[in-house]
Each structure stands twice: as C-alpha cells, then as structure tokens.
Image 1: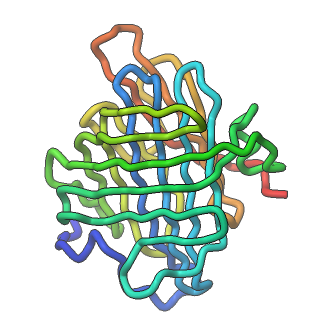
Image 2: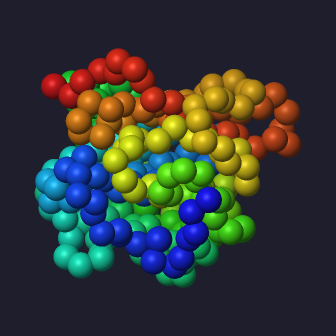
Length: 246
C-alpha cells in the first residue's frame, strides 16, 4: 500500500508521459437524497490546462452543471481557477482533515443530464458554493495505484439559480494521479466508501453526467434506500460508449 504524506493532498510533479493527469473529486450528499453536489478538477500538465466539472442534482430536481475544459494551469500549487464566467477555489486548510471549496459561475439547468456532454443546451443558471469538507478518519490508500479516498461530513452553502441551500451531509473525497483513468468509478454511503461502479441497494432518484474533455464519460447516480434511516448513496459509473461533446 502506498504511504501518504501531507504533500499528497496537493498537486504532484507530473510524470514523463503526456497521458499523466491528476484528479481531485469532492462529493456532498444530503442524507435524504434531496441534494447532491459533485466537483471535479482534472489537471493535465502536458496541455497546461485544467478541466472543472460541477453538478448539483437531487430528488425531484433538474441537474445543473458547470463544465469548463480549457482553464489555464494556475501558478505554483494553487488550485484557484479563473476563466470566462467562472471563479473557483479549492483550499486544503489542513491535510487529510479540512478542505474549503468556493465557486461563482454560470451553469446550465438540463432537461436531460446527458446534455452536459452532448449538445450542451440548457437554461443558463447561476451557481455558487461555499462548502467545507471535514474528514472523520484517515484516508484509505489504493493498492497498486497512486491515490486515496477519504470520508467525513460536508457543510456550507449551495446556490442554484434563485435557491439558497444551507446543507450538511456526507462529505467524500477522491484524489488520484498517474496515467490511469481521469474519472475513477467509486461510491459512498454515509462514511462508507468503495472503489468500483457497483451501486448500493436503493432507488435511483437523480443523475448527473460529466466528461473529461477527451471522450471519457461518467454518470453520478444518486440513490435512496427504502427506509428513512439509511443515508442516500452516490456512485459514479463509467460509460463504455458515452455521448461526445459537439
């Protein structure tokens, strides 16, 4: 198993392959499934670019997504991003303990989540985040790979259009680097995490879709259990042949 140090929370020196990339992913899931948020950064040093993906979705709601694949790499080790119509920041307050994320952007409210990676049609909708992730336990390193998962709680403010949500729920994080897939399948329910695309038992109530800008597509599937005591789960599942961006 890989040994992890505080520096592993931050950007890593790129490997020699042009296919080397680095992905951070944060997920917030309100326990009753009424709202989930997924945020992804994909760092591509060979192209000197970063992709930013953010979706807000939930039971009985439209999926709203922000997708930007052409952001210049920030200077030094900062994860503050600026591009036309988007500002986002991702601050490691304390390694393996506390992250703060902010967002001010315009996304698209989608009739079909696939539209995020298809023709890109939707209703222009302001989106904002001021959310903190606090880990409850040490990270779990991946066997035979460079990366880890961490679980805890997340809380803060989510703005979608004219709606303001004060949220608290499961807070899950993933970070990987190397030449493997940029959008890794994994899932969480409460403080339980696992790699792979297998879903927990429950009824699917919402979905969001994202792509890495190079053809790899993933669905985030939000499910709720039959009983009121089991928290909602969120699992990502890669597609073998997903829609492509027009």
